[in-house]
Length: 73
Image (cartoon, rainbow, N blue to C red):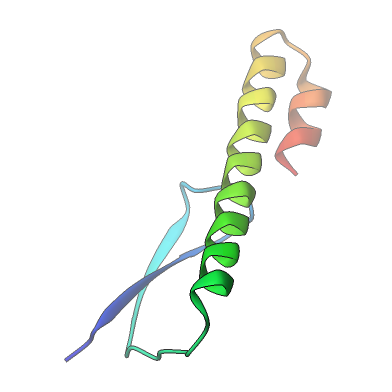
């Protein structure tokens, strides 16, 4: 049947709105070094996204809504 489920985010830093899409598995032959580099980059991007959300929550809590809104964009 289907071999893989891929998570796609709708919006860069809004992990609440996720869609699950089922597709057939497609493999690419890439080196271990390249796979590790891609994984590292994805982890850094997600870390940054959550960091911006944390900063937005900090500013919203202190009633600095302009800063909070800017960080959510």
